[in-house]
Image 1: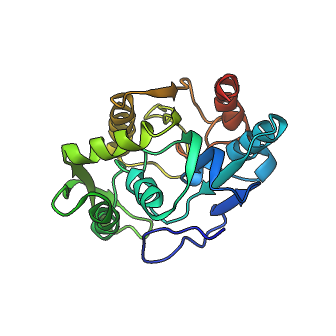
Image 2: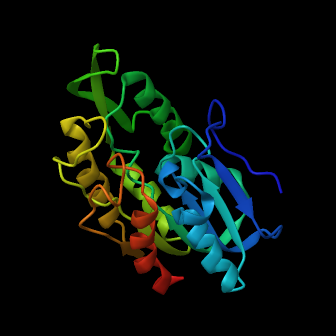
Length: 237
């Protein structure tokens, strides 16, 4: 079946992944995630583990991982609006990309998705930090501030079906990774998690104690990290 997304172009990276075992318009599980859903081999990734479990339950699924470069609550909202599908369950990790620091041009792309979803003037990019890029140039990083309409949009998505939200594991600012994250990155994780926790009618998966064995860049999960999350998620599938 055709699927529709609102954006300039589909993401072409290796972490873009779409799969389904059904052609029906009513599906048991929608799994909608950003790039953290698929890290490394499919079988050891979080989405690979989810697919295996749903298959063993003899349920239908539609899995969508990073359809656009920026995959946010607005991406999911537009997907619902553009596709005539219903789901009994939603599993998602939205909320992280919404709040992470970005270059201004990338924020503008994210706001464009939001405007299609809820209208103009409901978000603004605000400068928060200067950061040294890989070529040693300082770049200005921005975060997006949202109106109340954005939370209401996310709440509407959550309330459509039984919803499981996987919050972002908080990591130490001192985590040893190849390239240090900007200071604002860590407060952005907290902001995204707080946004999700304020949504009613959802099952929240929260994992603590993540270190270098669970994530190799403070964002994406290793096989050990994916299993840590899956251990909590299995009981709700």
